[in-house]
Length: 454
Image (cartoon, rainbow, N blue to C red; front, side, top):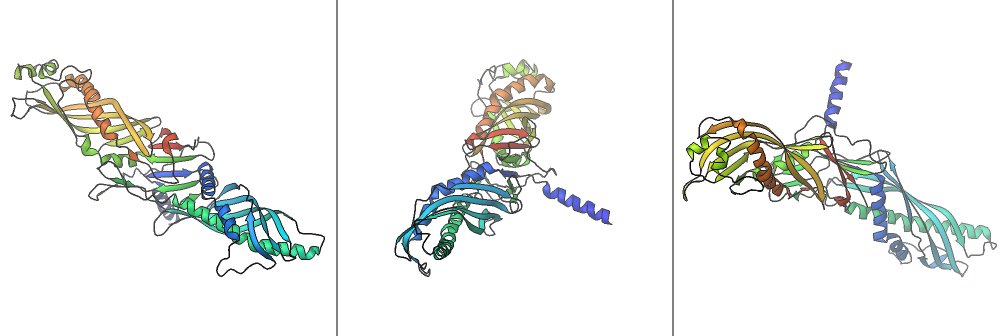
């Protein structure tokens, strides 16, 4: 019985890990950058210092000091470390000078060097579903204290005064700075859940699967992206039953974004109808003229049916959902569809169908990033199969058309596919991330963006 229970639980755990969506791993490089940017851009320590001397309702003045002001705030040095299962431990080292009138009636200056420490717990906001940092356990630790007060005069009184004064001033002055910085950082998650358009064909939304996980080396954010058509229908991601994991060969402290092949497949499903095209240009790239005379060189019966040359019109329809697959270093887009060729008739008369072929072919995908979008460019990899479904010109060996159709797909159809793909696939909007410097790597069943800050 115990063995059966163990097998069931292991199965549930395995299924839970098999997330077909997207994973984000935040290393210390990005977290250091974001916290330092928030501290610098918000000028929060200077603002707190400016507020220190103001009278605030409900706050009693500190005994023994009047006209208190804070000046010469030193540039903070921020040190972060991950706390597994919790979030980030933060230490801000800084210094400042506190001035005012002391209880002995003299102008007072106290120069302090201090550390502010706090644990920034990473949670998931219940209302928005967004990641959010919340500060707790803030402490102010004095490193050194210098004063112009006469220490040889009543030293016990002076020391007691300094001790009580600093312990009253500093936590209330400095700890709100930590909270204010986190507000600034949290705002940079605000757009993460927004629905982002994929042209006019639908939207994708990055939804958190659960509370982000903190380890000793990184924070991992798991997404279950919602891919939605304009009318609200959701395209379900295929669950391969495999857990996606980041490769081990990335630099310690670096950050990565993983997009599964199943997720990219779901996004491309929004573009499915756009892959259906009609091509009726007579001259296409390096191809010979698209006429019945050219086609007769492969199928002699065409010349019998059309002794006078007619322009060709080709209709390609993708009748099965396209699929993205990935092996290390290579990604393919699989198309199953039909290719029907028509001979143009006199004006006002519908083109006549020559034959209808079923085709299966793969396109090789090259990935790149432009701004906040994943871009794809394709080239023909292989024409895997070609079979005749119907023909108005009688039976023929469709294998004779393999070279002709292969060239046609590469020169005429692939450019149409690439035009559709120019719309780009949205990447998650978090922490003002600049994706332009990302390095892209194709791994087993996933694309990994190694995120760079510069």
